[in-house]
Amino acid sequence: MIHPATRLAPVLGVAAAAALVSVHPALAQDNVPADPPAEEVPAKAPPAMFLTAADPAPSSLCQAGEQLLFSGNVLDDFGLGLSVCASPGERDAPATIAIRSEGEGGGTVVQCLATECGGFIEMTQYTRPRFTVLTLEWMDNGNWNKLTESYDAEQTADGEGVSVVRFQWASEDMLEAGTEPLDDPVEAFTEPLSMLALTQYLEVSR
Image (cartoon, rainbow, N blue to C red; front, side):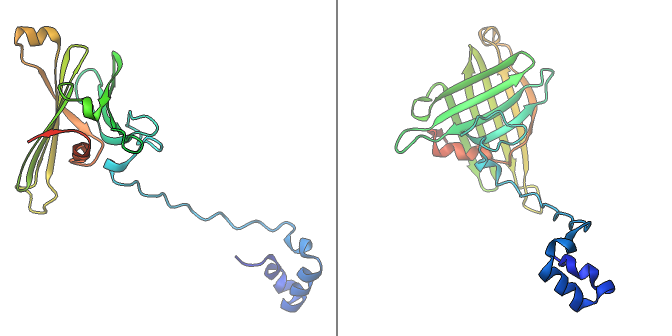
């Protein structure tokens, strides 16, 4: 930063301006505009699978202290938002897994200790070279829910891969009647295959 005294140099001379500051520094700073603040460079967010709701992503439903594993909006007529979250347990305690949803009809939370999610929240994983399918199934007030992500890097020359996420839902009555579940695409906000982080908490069927 240029010292304010140098602004007086053309009038008083460099030596006189310096002397003025050494004797009366306040005089040299009157009516001198401050330098503009430095422009702030926004920090990049960490990888989505490690985001926490202490500083949540705008579209995350996870709560403070929860790890964000997946977040997206179901492209249906109800504006349903979904987030899959985990709260790591202290010391040797198991993590808590929570599936949070919010839409036109309100919000719900399905959660369980990772060691007790069997039959309640189920995860499967299918993998072959350059292709992965992850599914997460759960029951919510008698309604069946299924979130599926397929990641295909076989058909892309750049190796980036193509991720497709879909959400299926069936009410208790639909299940009893054998009616096909609703099936809608999902706009994901987290990185592809971010749900793989669930494998460190849940028992996964392969």
